[in-house]
Length: 252
Image (cartoon, rainbow, N blue to C red; front, side):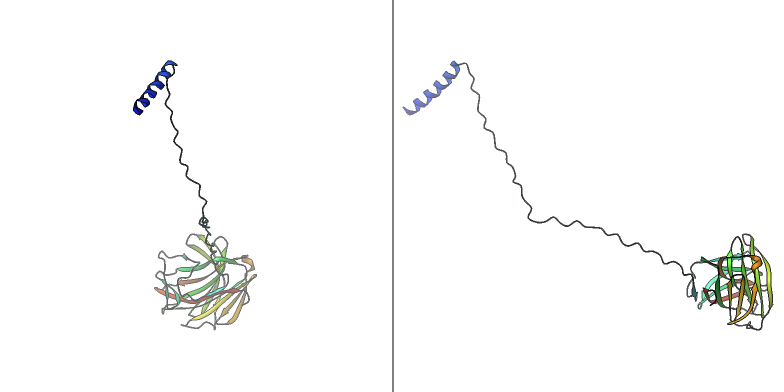
């Protein structure tokens, strides 16, 4: 009897709906959305790396006054040549800056290019490694446009002072300022000689002795670079060596 009752109720419900002219709309239950809970971080975020650039290293400027003993290739020096088609052989031998000149009457200049000087003292120790005579020299107030002063000695006991100027690349002319024989030049030996370019006067030194002063005001050179000089005569090959060079303040 219970089953019959349930069926009858179901039929009665459907019939009532039809009679009223209504269509039964199924009821859809919405599915609840799953929302992930917001988590509060329990750890601090990793620190942000800060890039610190390396300090910029400022190169050490070349010295204005110094003594170079030629323990290696001399920095900041330029080699210039007057006359001669072949360049000299340049080397550092036993702590000496050496030049092998293979053509006669070839002049070589080694100019310190980092600074220009008004008044300056330059000194060197130099000699020849050959039996043939050569010229060994110092220059001051060197300028490609205006010229330079040059003090040369030879192991035959002579010396000269010149005013040099470039006429063209590799071609120079010289005006003599002074020349003579000096008892202070050591024959066939290493000599130490210096030149102080001070105002309009050249002070010349041989092996520690001031032996001459020359007025050069007529040439009018005011400032320039310093350097060394070497030259061959008619007999070749000629080899010269500079043991050291000192560039100091005028009056040293």
